[in-house]
Image (cartoon, rainbow over all chains, first blue to last red; front, top):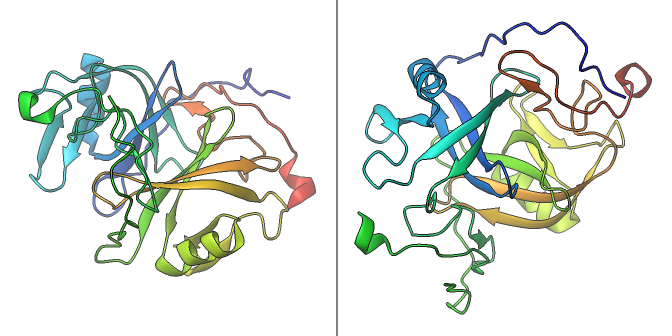
Length: 127
Length: 127
C-alpha cells in the first residue's frame, strides 16, 4: 500500500517549548545513522537554503554549521519529518566523519562499550 | 582503521536533567530509520532484560512497551550509544509497522509534505 498520491502540503514543524527539535542524520547511501543533534527554526531554514546541514549547538548556544571548521560537512539530500512533526531526519552525504572522535558515526559503541564503528580520521589533525 | 580491540567497558548513559534520552529505532536489516522516542533508565533496563524495545511515553508519563497493545513490537538486536552517551540507537526487528498511522516508519513524509513511506497496516483495525 502507498498513499504517495495524497496532496502534499508543507509540514509545520512543532518546535515545542524550547524551540528545538531533535534531528537524526542518516547517510543517504549506506543508511548508517551518523548522529543526532538539535535544530532550531533558523538552523532548519539555513539547511534548506544552503543544502548543508545546520544544527543548534546547545552547549555553545548558537547556530552550528556542521563541518564549518573541520570541513566534514553534510550535504542534505532530503529532510523528512516524523508523524508528530517534532523530529527531523536529514538524509545526508557525509564528508569525512560525523563524529568529533574521528569515527564515521557517533554511534560507534554498543552499550556494553564494544567499539563497532569505523574510524576515518585522526581528530588531532582536524580540530 | 578500527579500534575494535580497545578494552570494552559498559557505557554510563547520561540521562540528563529530565532523566530521559532520545532513542532512534532503526531496522536492523534494511537500515530504515523507524522512529524516535524517549528512554528512561527503567525503559532501558526493561529493554535489556526482555529484548523488546521499551520507551518512556512523555504524554502518558509512563513506561511504554512498544507494541504492547498493537502487537507491533520491536525485537532489539543491539543497543548503541553515541559519543556523548546521551542518545541511544536501537537496532530492531520491527513487527508490522512502527508508526501509529500504519506506516512502516514514522518518517514517511518529506518536509514538503510528500509521502514517501510505505503503509503496512490499517490503524483502524489495530488500535
